[in-house]
Length: 257
Image (cartoon, rainbow, N blue to C red; front, side, top):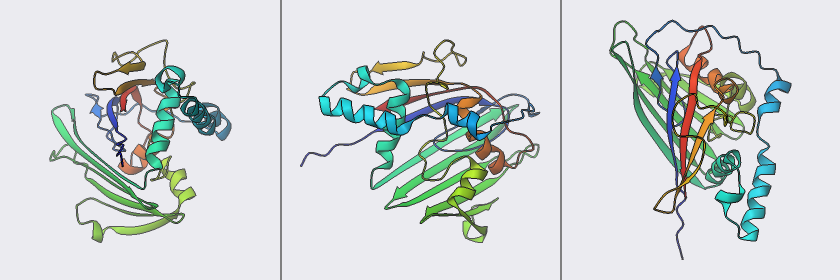
């Protein structure tokens, strides 16, 4: 039996004004710790207008698949991104590990994230810490999603078993964090959030680029408000920030086979 390995690799290059952690991501902090004040007024109708139609995208993928066409010529960047995440979520199990460090004003904030999905159970561990006496943020969080509920163990050290246990419905958790643990990505990638006319980050232009090994790099540059409209909820909650953090830009590379 032939074994097919699905490969998704994400490199994030994001500049934000406050420390936060999340799925598959490392942050480069601004030199100033004073946050910009941004009032996110995102009602359901406004947010709905920027969300991708994932079912329509998946049907497009199936149509291309059944016709034997070239995914990377017939599908758009938002379609490839959202379908890739859906295919990842359909696996019986997967694991992702991210490590990084944020440097601002000579202070290094270490960042670790681990995500595991197996047989209907989603697990996430998000850690962020530094040894600075000026900014001594220590976050050691774990969460489990199973059977319609999400259980969290959030604290300030690695003794996770001693952290306070809290249980939410998945709807309550999403309202607080902007996404559920079972959601593979915190970003909103759609036609209306993808930047194609300007490149704020200065990274590679958004598009689809073939590699010599048969893989493709999908370069994504997102609107720095709507592309992260739900992600900032997670960052504010986890880091106990007074204000929502602001993004200078949001760019990442998705490598798929």
